[in-house]
Image (cartoon, rainbow over all chains, first blue to last red; front, side, top):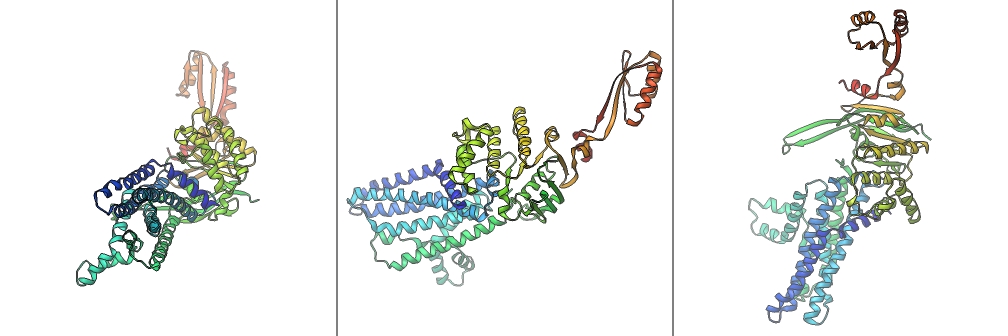
Length: 254
Length: 311
């Protein structure tokens, strides 16, 4: 299967990338380091480690999306390795989807390794593994996939720097959508409201994928929230992936 | 089987570039109205200076670029259909391959794209690595390969699907003289196997040695196409005559032929009109001169190339 061939090659490319290994080691190191920070706060160690660990997974996922996701497409286009592949009996959508799939596999392994570090730290502090973190971790993975989807999308037609900036904007704006919506409701006459409205209409609301606080504080949450977050994320991923394919399909490879 | 390996009708590519922050629009004609027919089983050299449109044509044939106008057919099928490429092997100009893979892994990856099973892939990879002389370096990372080795591996990937048509963009530009000779031999060997080879080049001597037909491209337009014999082979452009003559005869000849070169009693001159050569030789004998050599010279590919480009 051609998509699988591309995915496998992408997987090899990403796991042989030193940047990825460095980011991953740094993330795992930081999660383990959180035990020291946790130690400073009375009775809150486990909570702080979990909070810190989940946030680290989210942030490092963003870094991986920017450094690996963007590089993946830009390198293919700039180094012209795409000539070899795109001239074969393969559809362009298969190339884009294969690349995305390969990256998704690498990211899944990263998230598993970071989760392992987090559970390891939790085990040391609490002598138990908190499987209650699983829904939050799954949604963090979906969030990273969504950000990578945007990174791939931007990098099909933008420079690496601009792609990185735009991906960062999506991440930040995506987490601020709730705040922007409240602002527009509180001050309906402000002149910048059109911009804020545009942002929360177009950009994904990444807070739907954020269960960190709920799982760390053991707050009761509806299972519907998890399923909704999952479907919302996957839906957005499909939409942005279709746009990426559309642009890639029309592209002349320079 | 269709008669033509490649056929294009009015193939045109116009590039529009937005510059200066969207304020200026620059339009460049990459290729204009290309009507080309490449026969099955022939070696066709596509010649032209830099930016003549050779690579643009190849990119349009391989669907790396979309045409502004016109159509192309490969082995009788529209090149817009992806499956058409199953019968095509393509080597880009100065190829860059995935340098994090080994040579063997790279070919395995290409074999997977063609849907070859593991057994077929292994068999073909071993055969091709041997053919391009990389069998001893197959497990090394491409990152450590020289440009010539990358070129050889690039050719191996182009042959992995046993294509009927090979499209090679400047295939000999990265190779040393020995490598170029191997490459020329390989092209002729592939031709013997019934494959069509379409290659672009700016190295005229290579084209002259292997091509059955050539096409010359200038500023995006095809200005000349035909067999080597049609274009350069049959036309005698001059005859060099060298002979011994007496001193007085030499003076007479020098008066008539101002450009004659004299060394002692030996005189060498060029007659541009070949039809007067028999009469001229009779006269030399009549004067008592002794003919040393008569060498007709034909137009070379380089001369044709230069005259077509208006230089």
